Amino acid sequence: VEESHHSSHDSTSVTIQTEIGNILIGCFYRSSSLNEDQNSEFLDHFLQNASCNDQTEKILLGDFNCPDISWLSGNIIGPKNSTDNSIKVQQKFVEGVHD
Image (tube, rainbow, N blue to C red):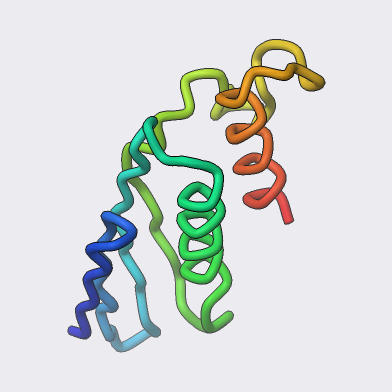
């Protein structure tokens, strides 16, 4: 078992080595009060975990504070071209996850 904790990103993860391969389990918390730079940093950190080592199965979960994302469809519920900063942040998150 290999553990890592990133206090600046409010996340922790563990990699479990099994006979059939590695499993990365990551737990994340994204505060709804992050500024734009902090949101970008959080998204970069999240996506690094999501894309690390193709041979590792990943389970990434947590509280992303994205109430306007439909997690079933992966779309924003509401206007995509909104000037609301919260919607913009959530749209970037959805776009990053889909990439």
